[in-house]
Length: 268
Length: 277
Image (cartoon, rainbow over all chains, first blue to last red; front, top):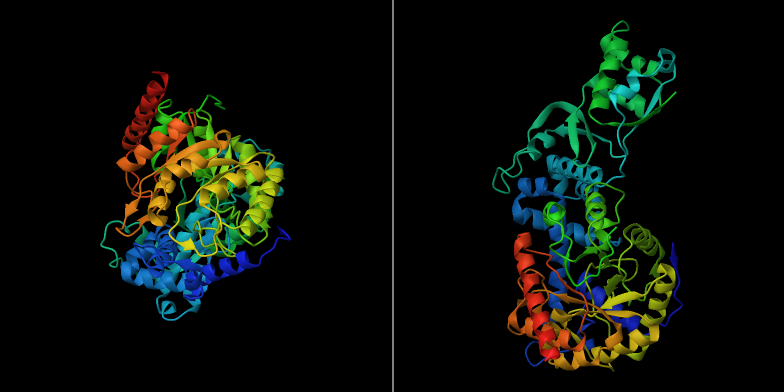
């Protein structure tokens, strides 16, 4: 929502439109509106802005996506970054959110979509970034659950931390990301996983965490996020563990999540 | 929250969070970049709150786009107001520029033409922002690289008149005056002398990159001797105005910035001594 200024946008508006077009589409309409100096011609001076525009946003993306930089190297990174900057000019006040659509852009755009591991790396890094400055919630403790009366477990349901994200990766991007600083940029190799794996990414305190989930753990976490009560969480793991072992397996997984700082609250 | 008097401050940068928290009292105040803290939670807000407990702070934005022909961004103003309520800053500043239009943000401080039309446009918007924030806005002169054929006023006359019409204050960036004076071939001292004394709220100091035919405001180097000399003139003209050093790239160790801040202290003390003699 915005407020209309009702202001005159005559020559001021024309000048601003020409300036922005100079940055975005290399329009030369601005040339006539600026002066040479005795020391420099107007194109040299205008290009301080045009060069700065691209370089500033490339730097933002490099900070957000060090794993992609490690995979692609500076030249290829620069290529995809400039293509993204052209396709997705920033619409928000903070550069913090500028790189949000990079994974979708690469996934839909040749030649970047020929590198699915790189697309997955970008999704992983954006999820880490989202977890980094998501809303602060203190996770519950295992002691709080232990103190509940037995009958509470019949209806007990949970809310995960707002930072919790789940991603399915066909490549070992999380493992590779941890090696991003150990290799020359451009040389980070990412292996294909034996089968697609679900990863949880969350921030229990001030540092983001991530780990892979077992198949039954994924099913149970899906049920938890959907707001199902503990007996239904047991049903979610039963196809993998068998009915007899389901309550113990569900309780063990729940304990691991609570101790890992993944759960924000419970209700019954 | 600390509300002690502020004289010599630094920009609050993540590279220095831990040292700042571990060694309070070496700087009088910090200037936080508003947009960096417009996030739901996490480490940035943790450190902002933690350091705010020990130091006065100012908020300094880069995306108000006060000169744009786009409508003011209500959501941005809401977020800025919420951040100001949280931080209780000494003042809230941004830049006299536009950063984009048609809903886009170029993330750069693009210069305005110094025309009566622009003056009317910006004055009206500053007053509406001030109403919205419930406080005076402090606007910074930017470094610029191009001169518009359409400009009718000098930059200094434009800023001085804007501050009177809109009843706003001025963040006098001494390095930006130096950079623009070189790029546009004007007298930096004339710029300083034209600033209304009672409206100068803060000084900025920073380094820049000299390209021979022009200077770019890069904030990635130490402050050069010529800018220190201009700063001495500014301190003479506007005694008691708080000073702050900006470094946004090639961030050096905290100790290095503290030493640079000591240089500002020495210069300001020298000016005070001269004035007393």
